[in-house]
Length: 315
Image (cartoon, rainbow, N blue to C red; front, side, top):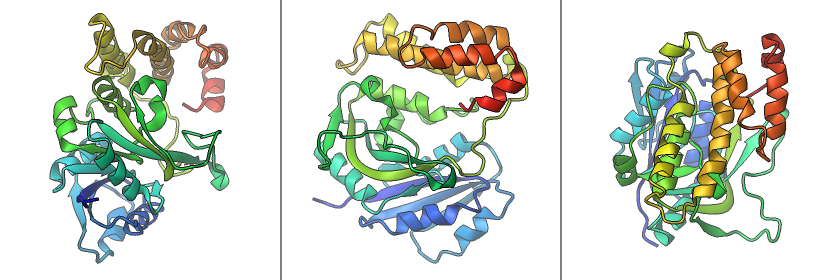
């Protein structure tokens, strides 16, 4: 298999406790044909100084004023010298064969629009969750093509996924005008157009206990905030109105089912700006969802007391 250079893009903002772990996990890869682009988004805790200590010439540090994670991630993609872009958040880490598996997927399934390894979340006190994909039948490593993205939409993340520059040029970069879940809009656009290649190898660990990953209220008023859920619903509604997508394997029923998840997100976003009555309307849309019904009922009840809601709910 011919080796192809991969550009690793890491947005960095105030991750002084974690960036070394992320960089070390890239440098420890069994697949070594890569460059690392760290985009320091105006860190104030000295994170960038830790990056400067590395002598590996494959590491490139770009400093910019604080502009948000999407702008930092997009700049890294645009500055990349390779056509293959592997994403990694500064507080997450890779397992040694992550890039090796991504390279296999890319060469094996060139028709796909994104390539990802299995991911495992790390909670408080280092407790590991089940991986995103659990193979109950066999522990044998498998390479899978997901023809319908909505059958397993959680397989893509900003720490486990490889995308080509060609695909980014087709579907667009990470949206820069929303404050949360910017990545999901990208995954959905790719899934509506392409199948997804996936390796059951646990190649990435997503650290929930890391800094700057808290559920907070958003300052501002509804007219000043663009919701990620609104943009996603717009893309899904457009696909439904055409009764098709560029990916012929996407079923209408799967898109409708996925919309309930976005309704749940929309309600959660409304709660963060204090629009509790409007939030309850969207929680109501989820009551008859197998996945979100009970959670929506719980949040509807909690929404009558804002303090209790934010005490017990993490989105």
